[in-house]
Each structure stands twice: as C-alpha cells, then as structure tokens.
Amino acid sequence: MAYDALFDSVFARMDPERIHERAFAAIRLGRPATRLAFRVDPSPVTVMGVEFPHRFGLAAGFDKNAKGVLGLLALGFGHVEIGTVTAKPQPGNERPRLFRLVEDRAIVNRMGFNNDGAAAVASRLHKLRGTSAGRRAVIGVNIGKTKVVAAEHAASDYVESARLLAPFADYLVVNVSSPNTPGLRDLQAVESLEPILAAVKAVADTNHGRRVPLVVKIAPDLADEDVDEVTDLVLALGLDGISATNTTIARPAELRTPRDVVEAAGAGGLSGPVLADRALEVLRRIRARAGDGLTLIGVGGVTDEADVRARIEAGADLVQGYTGFIYEGPSWPSRLARAAR
Image (tube, rainbow, N blue to C red; front, side, top):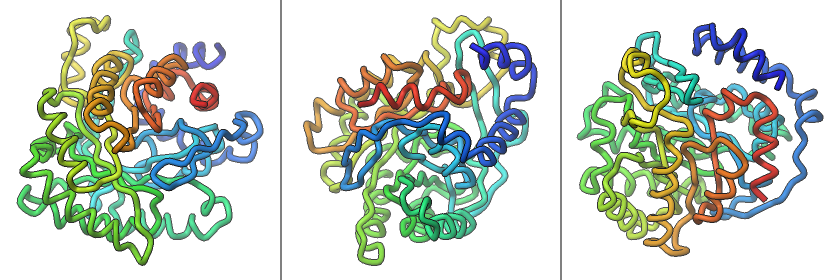
C-alpha cells in the first residue's frame, strides 16, 4: 500500500524512463538489505538441465546490460533474463520512448534495443561469473538483431552475439518478436527463422564443451497457424523451448485509458494485464501441439499470483513478469515467487 501511494503521488508524475533508471540504481545498491527483506524459501526445479531456485523470474527488458542481476535476484526473482543484447552497441530510439497507461497498469515502449553491445555485456558477465554469488545466479541472455544489419545478414549478427554471450548464459533466447526494430518480426516467418535458429543452435551446442539451452521468443500477434508452424520448426530443429509471449502491437478496445492518451503514446509494444488472455492462449496452443517436447516460458500480462498459477496450469515450466514489477513495487517478485511453487 505504501508503494501504491508513492507511485500515485510521485512516480506517476515523472518521466517513466528516468524513474526506471533511478529505481534500478537503488536496486543495485540495496542488495544486502533486500535479500533479508524479500527472502523466498527455495523450491528448486530443473528446467532445460538448469536448476532454478523456483519458477518465477524477471523477463528481458528491465536489465538490458547485466548491471543489476544480483540486486534483482535479492528481491526474490529466481532468475533474471538480461537484454535484449545486440551484436553492436546501439542507442535505441529517440526519447520519449516509454509511456504508462496507468488506468490499465500497462506500458507502451519503443525502446529499440538500446544496449551496450554483446562484447561489453559479455565482459560484465565474465566479471560477475567470477564471484561466488555470480556463479550461483541463474541468468538467461536474450539476443536480438542489430538495427543497421540487413535482414539477409541477420543470422550472422545473431551468431556474433551468441558466440560472445553463450559462455556466461544459463540459457539463450533468440528474440525475433520485438515490435521496435524495423522488420524484426518478419523474421518469425519460418523460412526466415529457420536459418537464424539453426545457426545460433550450432553455437549454443558447441560452447566450449558446454551445451547452452536455446529458446525462441515469439509475439502474441502471430496468427494461430503461424504459432503452429514456429512450434513445429522448434521441434524439428531440436531447440529447447519457446517463450510466449512478447509485447503486442494491438491496442485492444478493452483498454480503459482514454483513446486520445493511448494514441498519444504512439507506436510500440504494449504490455500489462491486457495482454494476459492472448499470451495464455498462445501458451496453451503450443503445449497442446508440442506435448512434453518443449520447455515453455509463460510471459506477458503476468500481474498477480493467479496469473502465475494459470501459466503453470497451462503448461509453463517457467513464468516471467516485468510490467507488474513497475506498478506493484519491490515486494512483487517475492509474492509471485511464492505462488510459483
């Protein structure tokens, strides 16, 4: 309740990206105290051959550059998926590029994969893995296409990121579903997706003698038949799983935020509770088609404990959230982690 009052009186009036930067700085500084305040008793689960403390983790997008992994884990997340990281550093889109739809507890973002680049993030992860806490941390690495790289060279761009980052990842995620890099979602078509996944898998399978699990993240806006085709491709290539889903480009009629406010936010990916139904539908569809053959990460619109349980019941092996963290505050990860048993 105290966080709600603070959000309504202060945070909601400030620039969202600036608030994110300040909150993230506080998270990085407050690790020892937060570990005690938000302790979650472990309920270990082995997924993709990796032992996770519990099923609930932080989705990609919050910690793009692996600067706050330990602070975020101290809040109660069982794993942190960093990124999205691109082969080359890039500034992302012009500000403002992050917008709140407060009445819907939703966010519109068009960040554009702003990150320090794979080499810099790999260096940071190398240093982190050199510590005892860093070696224990469960870290996923989400990789995307560098904006200036042409679609026909996408596979080699993803491979460069995978080559640099796989040595430090518990699992890799190929992101072809962000709406904020021009043409990226076109790579979800199986004829474009197959060479990318095959090339990255070759890197992940031969990573200095340690195989790194590989997952692809898809959009909720795919038609059902396209979801089926991607599922079949992932099975055929022998990938480990699918993350379902990313943000949506849709602006559903059920949004409570006034339409002029929604339109003023402009283009970008919409996240928050309004995404939950479609994300859950896609998750169920993939599980029904793949059976037990794939690991599924349920993400998109995960807001409360009931959402976590619904994803697990629908077949998710892991559950992730992000937007709920922004609106619910620092106690949110530990609350949802306890529901993910």
